[in-house]
Image (tube, rainbow, N blue to C red; front, side, top):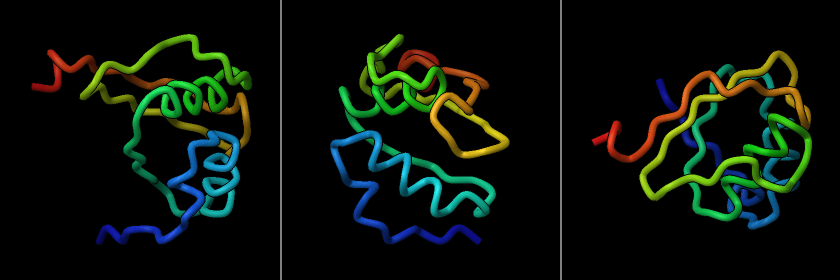
Length: 88
């Protein structure tokens, strides 16, 4: 059963605040986030390379799957990335 998480930090435009919220839910198993740029691209950069400067930019409708063993900056790996044309 999927349960929505009620944490206002996920609505933050500060990707480091979103990372802190993810850390609180580290043992949930799987978390899905929906967002907008530039925050989403900055968040993916922090999660994967530990730096806020985006190394990629999401197009509207783009989707990415990230995984990690430990929720920390630079601790995530991009498993796959779908562009809007592939999603539709």
